[in-house]
Image (cartoon, rainbow, N blue to C red):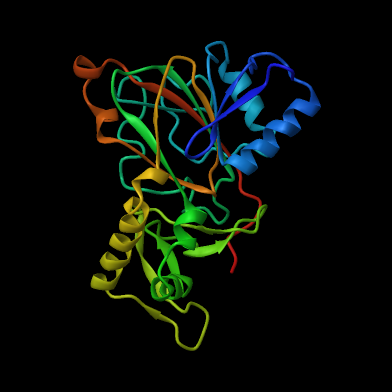
Length: 271
């Protein structure tokens, strides 16, 4: 661990001096897990040699792997979600439906997401926003409103989640949301005042969330992938979105291929 070095980013930190393709000690695993919790995102540089099997194994440091997504024919393992800007190489338009956390439609959203860039395009970023910071800088009126809202996923059998809830590990306020996969919101769910929000109200709330994410551009981290980048994110602590450029044609930006592994959440979001 003498070479393990963190370089702070505006969100998260870059990690140098560690080859994740090789076995690491239990002590090192615990330090990495602690740093992910503290920094929310760890960007490991120069990890070209991580195999799909090793990618899944690293994910298992954080819990049980959960794979609910479409298995592309070129995905090397069932637990690897392969995304691309070429539909023959991977699933396209992934992350392009709006700011979100992964698995908001699950009873327990994914606890962690792990990304490995396989083929680096010339353009396109994945942006991350700190959810606790966003909540803690809301106006009192907007904070009060959001505390009363519950999100309904567009998946018909999906659960109802509080928009603001407590992170199961850090106990900090975070958001359960997906701007592109929300059927609507319920006000004061489970109380005598419970009511479904109108179409106009739903649109206004979704716009509010987007506005608050973008209100302070300096707190958003835009990750431009480099060869070998491997990211471990606390999925519940950061919202993210892929930029439009990630889906430009191969003839324009080159081939983009990224592998993602997700870790099952342990608890359903609770007030």
